[in-house]
View 1 (cartoon, one colour):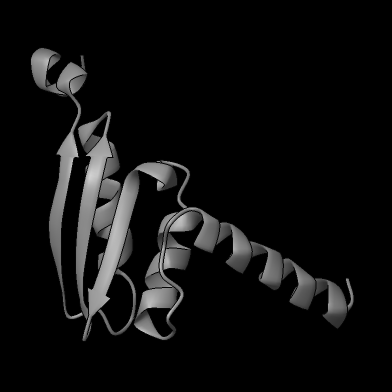
View 2 (view 1 turned 120 degrees about the vertical axis):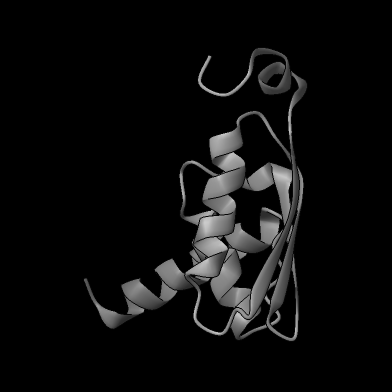
Length: 101
């Protein structure tokens, strides 16, 4: 793989991240978007991440509790994140049956 391939791959990934609804304003926000984008357990099209001075707020709705937890864990691992407010809601199916059913 050449340097050009790596660069074009990164550009393509950044366009995909932006298309998924995550902000690419730079720094911590870009790293948060990247972490969420590459986690297969996180339905990227259903989560919105907002970053304000290192504090990240997650909103949206997912089908399972593990998806909510995974998104929060991804964000907490990003260097520069000071804290996370996880306002992601879990869909009605999981609330009705409980986790793991």
